[in-house]
Amino acid sequence: MGRGKIVIRRIDNSTSRQVTFSKRRNGLLKKAKELSILCDAEVGLIIFSTTGRLYDYASASMKSVVDRFNKLKAEHHQLLNPAAEVKFWQREAASLRQQLRYLEECHRQLMGEELSGFSAKDLQNLESQLEMSLKGVRTKKNQIFNDEIKELNQKETFIHQENIELYKKLNLISNENEELQKKVYEAREVNRGNKSSQPPYSISNEYDLHAPIHLQLSQPQNQTQPGPGPKNNEVPAKAIYNPSKV
Image 1 (cartoon, one colour):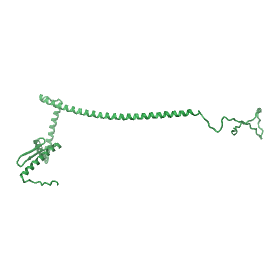
Image 2 (tube, rainbow, N blue to C red):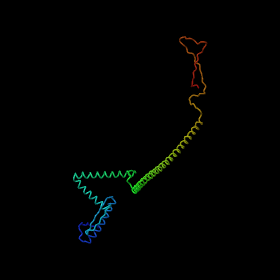
Image 3 (cartoon, rainbow, N blue to C red):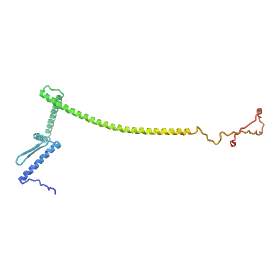
Image 4 (cartoon, one colour):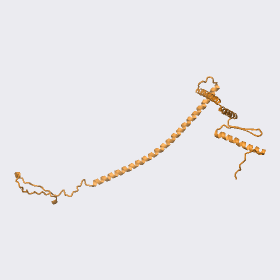
């Protein structure tokens, strides 16, 4: 069976009340610590027991948490008044200008400027700070270079694999070309053999070219009108080629 619902009210028994206080207090402190770690929150917890004993937890400093709470609470009340709101934003602008001047001064000091008022110890601290900054920059640069080298190595491996695949395809195409050339050469040899076995030419005709040709002279026909006779005893002749007699 599941646990029954507990009624939230004051425990009458002092012993049970003290035991419950100890258990709930430890659980509350644990939850506050987990909240500050997991969520990067600034947490401040203050507990007073019935005997007046203090239990507290602060993620950074209890004083800073309380000061921040009081400041925000006062600002919240001031924002309700327009005149107070103007003064608040003026103070905020002045604070931001002061922070900007401080940052500019630190930047000039890091660049090696305006060091006249520094002591030897201050300069040594500044040098240590610059060395730590330079070390961080070099570490970041080396990390970027290593990442680029790793990426280039991966690209090289990929390109090498592509070259291997292309080389295999090229060998396959070369073998296919050799097979095709071999087949073309064999076909040419077969055609040459067929041409050498056939006669240089052949003529097929229904007439025999070597049969003798018979010529027959035709008799002169009678003419109704006299015409000029043959000259110089010429005899008209007509050569008739009769293929049927061949």
